[in-house]
Structures are given as structure tokens and as C-alpha cells.
Amino acid sequence: MAGQTTAQRGAPGRADTAARPPRTGPEGPRIGRRTLLILIGVLAAALTAFVIWVLYGSSWLRVEKVSTSGARVLTREEVEAVAATPIGAPLVSVDTDAMERRLRQKLPRIDTVDVVRSWPDGIGLKVTERKPVLLVEKGGAFVEVDAKGVRFATVDKAPKGVPLLELTPEPSASLRRFGGDGLLREAVRVVGDLPAGVAKDTEVVRVTSYDAISLRLSRGRVVTWGSGEDGSVKARVLTALMKAAPKAGQFDVSAPTAPAVSAS
Image 1 (cartoon, rainbow, N blue to C red):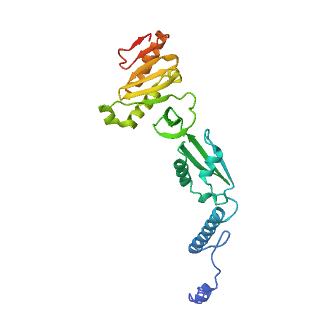
Image 2 (cartoon, helix red, strand yellow):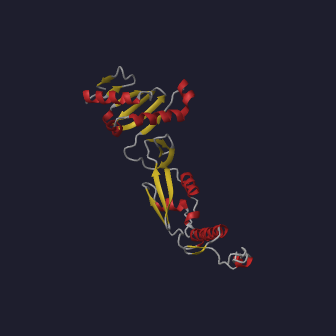
Image 3 (cartoon, rainbow, N blue to C red):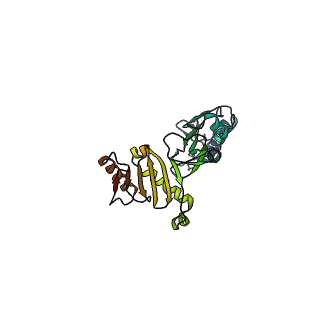
């Protein structure tokens, strides 16, 4: 009717508003943002707790076996005894750095070692042993020296194909400057520069001073090398001399720009 007021036409009041149903989305009632964040936090905490339990508390990821590779002179039993792998411990908790340090300290023959986790239940010990390039005779035994000049082991029998070092330094300025260890490193440096064929035939490396290093080869041949400087040049010159005079007994490459060769 024309005379009705707005209130009379049924304008919504407070009672009508309270009676309305909650807003819904396409799939049901909407979840508040705060509630959603709480649910996500609870799920994340539960997942974290489960992962921690799997790694540390369960029996699924525990150390059950050890494998060793790379050992040649050392035995697998020696390496694994020093490694002292904690069998039965959670794999994730194994201190691999401490194991590596222990192996290097107690087994000097080891040059490098990697201790790796082999999931789900193993530890791998990857060993690289030092290789002798020189021998120092001592009391009837032989001290092995590697390519870094490190004395790493004493053996009763000389390994085949490794030359003996005769370190007999004369009182000189070079001895005072470099010392015995410095001269040993120079000898190692020379051996590292030798041509493969010469290295195989080298029986003795003799050092009397920094610039007086010589080699005694098989069949009585002698090479005067001089200092360890210009090693690659000296190696090339020596190879050429030996090809040009295969029956010679004396080769001098101490001054590679003016080499010399003689019968004896």
C-alpha cells in the first residue's frame, strides 16, 4: 500500500541479521586465516618430530656395515680398526670428520681419506695411500718418502723400483740454508722430473749439496743433474742424449744448454 512506511514494508532489522546462515564458499564454510596458520604449524611440527625420530630414534637408519676401498699396503682390517666406526649408532650422528682425522694421525701411510655415509645403513672408507718415490736406509730398514717429501713408513724390505737416497751433504752454505729436509725435498723434486724410462732405471739418488745431485742408473750409468732447477728442460736434454749415445756411461745435464756425454 502506498501509505506504508519503510519499517512497515519489512526492512531488515537486527533479528533478521542474526538469523542469517554463515557465509560459505564453494566447498563449505570458510576457514579463518589464523586457524589455517595454526593447522599448518601443527602439521610442520609433527612432520619435523617424525623426521627426527626416523633419523635418531628409529632402527631404520643405523650403522650396520663398513666398506673400505683403496687400501693396497694397509689391510682392510687395519683401516677399519683405527676408524672405529660406531656400529649401531644413528647414521646421521656419525662424526665423519673425526674419523678422517683419526685415520690420518694413526696411519701415516694414508695420504687422503674420505669417510662417507652410505644410506641407509653403511659407512664407506675411501683411502688413498702414499706412494714411496725414495728410500732412506736406516739401521738395516728403509724409510719410505713420498712425492711431498714426507717420511711416512719404515719397512724391512725395500720396495721394488724405488731408488735409494744417499744424502751425504758436505758442510756448505746450501746445507746451512736448506738443511737436511730441504735437500731431501730437492731430491724428491728431481725424481719427479725424471723421464719415465730414466726413473725406472734409477737405483740411487745422491745429494751432496743443493746444486750437486746425481743419479746412478742400471748398468753402471751416471747422470750429473746439478740442482733441481729447470727439471723439465734437463729431462728433455737427457732423453735426447741417451738416444744419441745409447752406450754412453756418463751424462751431464747440470747445465742443460751445454750438456755433455762420455763413455765412462
